[in-house]
Amino acid sequence: MKEMKLSPSVMCISQWRGAEAVFKQLEAEGVELLHADAMDGTFVPNLMLGTESIKNLRKMTSIPLDIHLMIEHPEDKLSWFDIQPGEYVSVHAESTRNLQRALTRIQEYGAKPMVALNPATPIYMIEDVLEDLAGVLVMTVNPGFAGQRLIPQMLDKIARLRSFLDREGRPEVSIEVDGNVSFENGRKMRLAGADIFVGGTSSIFSNESTVAENIRRFRECVSMESGVGV
Image (cartoon, rainbow, N blue to C red; front, side, top):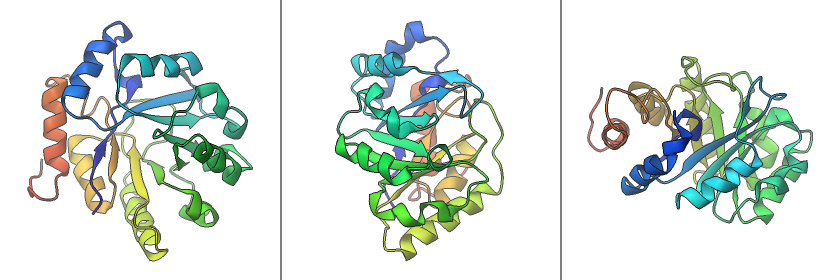
């Protein structure tokens, strides 16, 4: 099983004015990625994190960005985001007629290309771009808004995707999960085969405890060594 990575969602930080203090906590806890959602109001019915906001994130933290582009025709707009080497960048299979071109352009920036799949989008949509992928982002809720409940059948989708990738000789390809990644759901997702977790208000930014304590609890919940459940 691949080593897990935690990718807390910027859209779930309640006060941007105090975001730098939150980022310092995330850095201190060894968080691997920082999930930044870009929404255009067309592909999804919401607006979030414009190009300048994402650029400013890099000035506020040393954590590599995990950029999730929920925008139409991303292949024409990648240059707007000043993508940096080593960052993860997800484009939706449903958002473009030129998916392979978009993935190639992400690679040209030295970043790690990923395809995002909405809940109703079948796994076979990635079949002909497997050689271009560093990962697949499985949306476990319909994209656009935080605070939604997990769609239960997405756990089976994660497991089927992991089996498909392994069968196709791509065990190194990551599976990222986004949507109600709670402490309990995170463990179920891990057992299904996920290894990158987008944490939001149901885990990392839960008001029940501090950010640091939530991170430690989440890592323990998804640890396959400890056998700890919730």
